[in-house]
Structure formats: structure tokens, C-alpha cells
Length: 468
Ligand code: GAF
Image 1: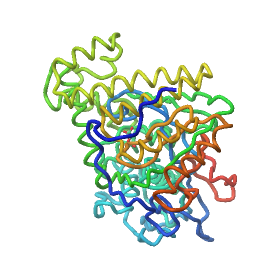
Image 2: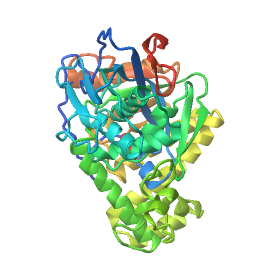
Image 3: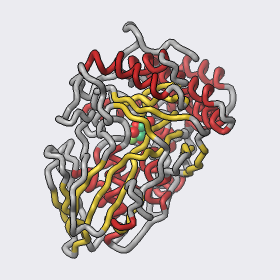
């Protein structure tokens, strides 16, 4: 097992934090105090469920048009709802800090204040309306869930997708999953994060026992069976990574730097160079699921610009990196090196999983973490510490998952090492910080779960999944 993660300062740059408290943010000890718990809603005939995701490898590659490799998890967001005829959306939550809200399904749908949770529901409605979906009936209901929020597990995309499924059901219509994933990825940018398309695609295409290779331009999803006997453990760094707040600026800055680096290496040098092909592979018009369609729609298809995918496909990565080092400023070179090497690691990791070689998979996770820490500068001391403790206790691999800047680490264990690894992380990471063992929302084992769905509440199979 390769080491070298964690420990000591003096490394190039640390991620700016979304706001570290060093302790849980709600009375129940959840890392982020998400819309958890359940509330009886006797008048709600329907339920939409959308899972969170854990990205196994391929971080900050999606908005650069390179593949990712996540799992949907067996935790998610539920909306119990009834259909209304007044064209309004009215939702509440059992969590006190999430105020009830209402808005009309009429364009334009205005944003609420920054950080307001209703913006994710508004984003879904706005995306559907702009896509030409007629939304005449509304929904009234309650949002609950068990995926910690601001934890890098994509609770926000789960809320966007669950909202879209509820609105589609209320209006008696559907969209193909790929199309809906691409649409919701664009729609979620309403909250201001220049995200790629990973989270919404993973949420809609999850398959039990399978990881998902997600490619962009055009959007494609290929399930890959996780070998028997391997488990993923998720451990919160206790640092919130709010997509709608502090982490957003740092994330968007990375996206800008990637475009600039691509322009430099590709020959254009301008900050905007390559933007159209590096924007995450989520189409721009009704029915589109590819960025080529988006380029066509903007009338710029004739300007062929470099894409990370083309550069990586050119062959020798060392040559490419030598060229990049010559033309890029140091910080842009490091961002560039992360993106292209991470793209390569995704392909190697998928091959390792298909070969059943999960030790190799774990090594690649560690390389990914090191690159995110040193080149992309999105890790934190807390994430590094979890990775170091987990590897020291026998985990096959560990890395930060999601955007970073806080959030969670994902740890790969064979079934025999799950317990010792969790014990070590509890003793060496949580005990000194919390003075108590972690709750089941701070550290937990996850399975690769199924995708989002909507149906009658009675059809719920007991784990939140409903027919699509
Ligand atoms: C966030 C974004 F929403 C994703 O699109 C992805 O870029 C991820 O950060 C980093 O890999 O979850």
C-alpha cells in the first residue's frame, strides 16, 4: 500500500474551509444537520426518492469532460407529497432550520436568498419549465432524508432530482433518465456552482452492487459490478462543505483555472479558451444530452477547440505534462496535472475493478487523494488525517470524496477490515475532536444502491426506493 498521505504541514496550500466547527452542527450530532428523520404525512399519496452518491474516483474531472466513477448509495432524500391543482409547490421539513416554503410554477422562478434550501427545488422546477415541460399541477409535501448535507455526498443533487421526479409525476409526464440527468445538471447551476454532470447522473442511474462509469460529451453511464467482499466506509471530516456558500467560490475558481490551463496547453491561452467543451457534457437544448449539441445550439460548432479528453487521448501523458509545464504558470500546471492524471486513474481503476483487483483500485484512490491534496488543493487537514488513519489500520484505499473543502472521506475495506478500520478512525480521529464515538451519520458503511424513482407510497420497498 502506498503511503505518503496526511501528516504534517508544509505542503503546497490547504483548501479554504467552508466553515469548520470541529463539532457537529445539530443536536443529533449529524455532520450537517440535514433534512433527516421521517414525518407522517397521511394525505401524501406519492413518494419520490433520490439517493446520494459517493464518488470512488474521478474528482473534479466531470466539468472538464473526463469520466468519473461513483456509486449511488443506499441513503437519500425523500419527498412525500400530494398533487395540488393550484400550480404551487409547498414543501416543509422536520428539521427546524429548514423553513417551509411555497412558490408558483410560473416563469420566471426567482431564486430565494443565498443558501436557502428552496433554491434546489426551484432549480428543478425552473429547469423543467425552461425545457418546455408543462407544469400545471403542483406538489405539497415533506422532505426527509438520511444523507448528511454539506458532506460531499450530493444531498443537494438528490433534492433537485427528487423534486423533478415529483413534479413530473404530478403532471403525468416523464423524461428519459439521461435527458433528465443532463437537464438537472444544468438546472442546478441556478444555485451558482459551475458543477459538472456527475451527481445527477449517479443519482438517476444507480444500480445495486455496481459502480458507475459516467462519461460526458455525450453523457453515458456504464455499470461495473463491485467485486464480492469489498465495502466502502464514509467518514465525515466534521467540516461542512456548502455548495451554496464558501466552497462554491473555491470550486468555481478551480473550474476557471482548468479552462485557462486548457487554453494555454491547447494553444489559445485565453481564460475562456475551451470553455464550451470543458463544461461538463450536459447539453443545452431540449432533448440534448451532449455538449456537441450545446455547441451547435450556440452556433460555435465550427470553432474546434481543444478538450481535456482529446489531450489525454493523444497518448503519452509525460510528454503532455512536459509541454504543459513549459507553458503554464505553476498553479495552473498543478491544476492541469491533477485533471489529466485523474482522468487516467479513472480508466485504470475501472480496469482494476473489472479484474477484481481491489488492492490496485485502492492504490489508485490514494494517488487520487494525493493529487487532490497537492495539485488541486481541495483537501483539508481533517480529510488527510482520516485517510492516514484508515490506511494505517489496513484499509485498501482512502481519499476525499466529492468537491473537497471539507465533507467526507471514502475508505475501501475488505469485509474483514471494516471493523478495525472504523475502530481506528473512531479512536484516532473522532475521539480527540468530539470526546465521544462518532454517530451513525458521522461514520457509516455504504452499499452501492439503486437509482432515483417516484411512485405510490405503498409501493415503497421499505428502503425508500420506489418504481420509476
Ligand atoms: C461537486 C460537483 F457538483 C460535481 O459535479 C463534481 O465536480 C464534484 O464536486 C467534484 O468531483 O459534487
